[in-house]
Amino acid sequence: MNRKTLELLLVNYNNINNGLRIPCAENSKFEKLIKETEELLKSAPREVTYPDGMSALDYSHKLKSEANTI
Image 1 (tube, rainbow, N blue to C red):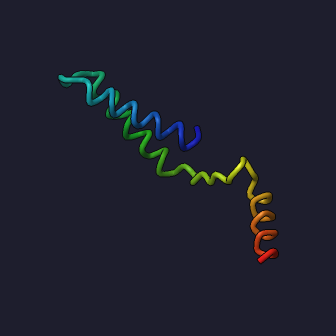
Image 2: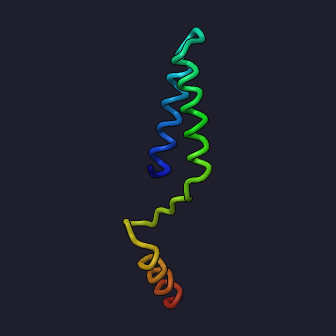
């Protein structure tokens, strides 16, 4: 799973867990899911987004050409 998906899952799990008013099996299930998702998020690589959907190589070429015009 990518980082954005994990972040959305975590928000949803927290919202569902907070909506459960009384302690029950569902509550502990979501607490476990929240913990697991937080761990996955901590270990997920950082995602870098470049403008206009460029790859890292394309973006480096763009920066190089901009630096050469100054």
